[in-house]
Length: 111
Image (cartoon, rainbow, N blue to C red; front, side, top):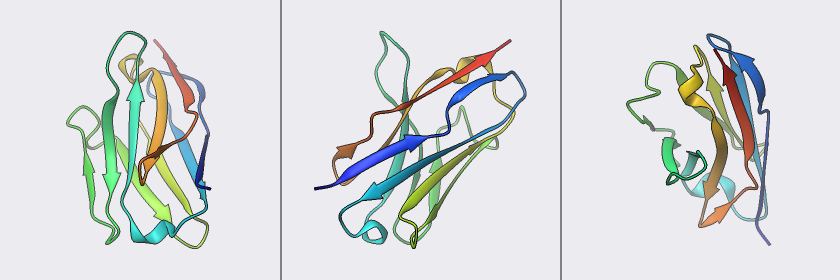
């Protein structure tokens, strides 16, 4: 059974940084792309970043240049490094892999 577990969220001031982690159990982690999404209450889940099995990355325009997605295949973990955080980045962040979702981790950025 596939399970995803996010961690690393928290409260940070604007301009600060956080690194989110998502560890996958079950399945061939390196064989599929991974996505990070975020969601604010009352709004649709928004794609933030993705990384392909070949390591190519893609970002939403709103986070380009500030966020970096990476992965460690041996540890079956994907990371989202978030720098220069803004209050508008406040959301629950989810990782998504092979149709599976984690439970999410809350990121709150204070002004």
